[in-house]
Each structure stands twice: as structure tokens, then as C-alpha cells.
Image (cartoon, rainbow, N blue to C red; front, side, top):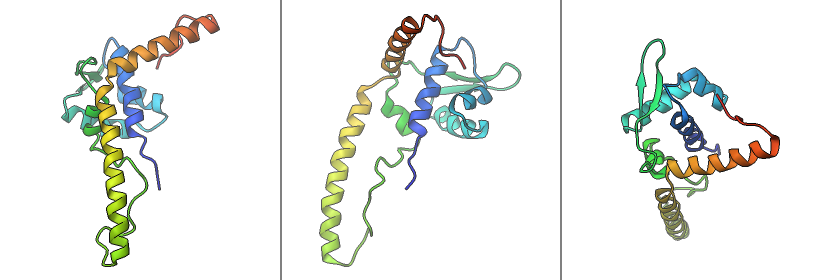
Length: 154
């Protein structure tokens, strides 16, 4: 089963937007993710509908962060992406006639619901600002170790 990388990718883009002094066009954001600008536009459109980003058309246009990074949680972003499935594992049949399979489904569903609740609770405690702080600390360490001042620009 395929892994959904949208949350990780969108968080990457949001950090770029947070650092930017102006709007960033879809093609530059696509370069950061090594993907197609149409994929970026489609994904960012959902974030725009959730009020997380805004877009500006025309020359000099692009995407801007419109949410407060101190208040924007990873759970907010996850939900803006449509709350994709967290697990690739699932029941063989959702409505089985077999009593054994019904027992298996109940046990698995309970475990999955508990795990999902833990993950979403953790996502609710993490903000975009916290990710930015982590990034800033990492870039300082990297720059010091490599004797560089600016190491990450799209």
C-alpha cells in the first residue's frame, strides 16, 4: 500500500512560506518537494480553503502563510488535508458475515482508534512555530559545523 506523504510535504512548504518575505510561486514550492507545480496548487488549494494560506495571482504572485504559526497545529494541517488514513493496515472486510472475522475487526478497530487518538492528540500539541524553532536550531548547528551562514534557500 502506498504511503501518503502530503502532511510531511505540506509542513515543509509551510516552513518555507513562514520564512519568506513575499509570496512563493507554485513552481518554486514544487522544486522544494521535487514534484509538479500542479500537485502543489491542488494541495495548497485545500489549505487555502481552511484559511491556512492565501494565494496571489499574476506576476509576483504565489502562496503566503495566512495563519499564526504559534497557533497553527500539525493537527490543523492534517485536517486541512482531509485527515488522510494514518495506517496502511486495515480490516480484510468491513462488514463480515463470519463471526471470527467480526471478532478480529472489533479488536483491530479498537486498537486503531486508540492509536489514532494518541497520534492526533500529539499533532494537536505541535505548532508550526515549534517546527520552525527546531529548524532554526538545526541550521545553526549545521552552519557552525560547515562554516556557512545560509544553507537553505528555495
